[in-house]
Length: 436
Ligand code: AMP
Ligand code: ZN
Image (cartoon, rainbow, N blue to C red; front, side):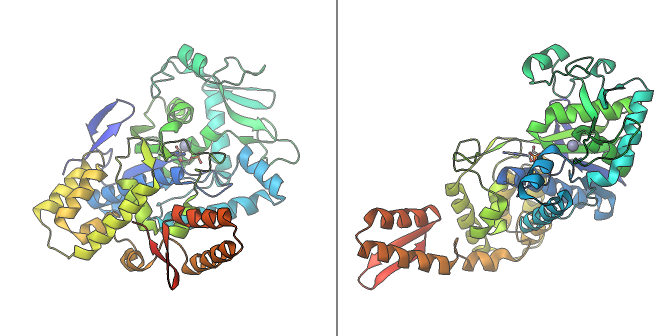
């Protein structure tokens, strides 16, 4: 079956034709590990997991390599570790573990390789040296910068000229830069900052060079697909291209560039101050991972996604209904339609509706759209909140009412309603049910 994927580089849907059908290679930018991942971060994880599974299905498990890095050296990591008063390694190891627990709960397969940036510093230093030697980078005041003027097609992924980029970007002007758009490959570290010895003094890598060096080490000079969220197109992916193509004599870093659209919550950009910021961990307390995954895949990956609790409840109900009628069936024409939908630029909304017709649990399970951990049982049984916590809240509300603190009583009721629990007051006391 022909696989077609939308390529950000060409702005068209293209037939996917692997560089080497016996070795399909996919690189996705992974998390910077300093805090729990939020539900927006879950989107690329789920989307590229579906792509990974689809590629394995089409080309065979042994023929697909998926690399997804962990950024474990970064200024945000440094300041969070200082705030918490813990060693950087303690913070990054703990956060990476939490990330693994979360994405496993979302049904994502582990990637083939999960390189940690700090384990590839020599490869990064070597790549920076090659960039300097070939005239694409220069060192100044303990920094090494990429010279964007040395790459005539810089801006080809973002489709912006240097002038447009300069006008639009908040570029850091620094005395040691030849051009304000030049970006950092290496920067100096003071005594208390993490740092490695290098030809330019003790320092640490810039974020972009990390991915170029890890991708080269694990996947070679050129590979098939590079992915990430749409916000990474510029500057991160543009800069990865500039670095890698400059050391590889113009060989394209990746043939196909795939970007998922952004996720908003209840129509707003997620932010802690708006109270609509949800970590995967928060949501997993109330919702099975499979419901979160199903809900994510109801929107095509390139569309902006509006994540709502109403939509989540619909997803839960739809899954329940599906499992209630599902029966293993032999591969049918409808399974072919299901696969065809996925092969058409990962059209998961269409694939899910085909599934309702086919009820082919095996195929859907294999592709991670359904049934990845026998969650059916949990779906049938688990309310969206711990029953003990609900009982406690009911007792607290009854006490508030007794004390005539009706505002507090209403707050407790509304709080439960927000979590999908409806209270019913009757002659025998208060009971609850899950709102659908
Ligand atoms: P970050 O930790 O911010 O580097 O993000 C990790 C991954 O999550 C990147 O691929 C981002 O593009 C992606 N991402 C971050 N926020 C969102 C969002 N709200 N919606 C979709 N993807 C996101
Ligand atoms: Zn990257």
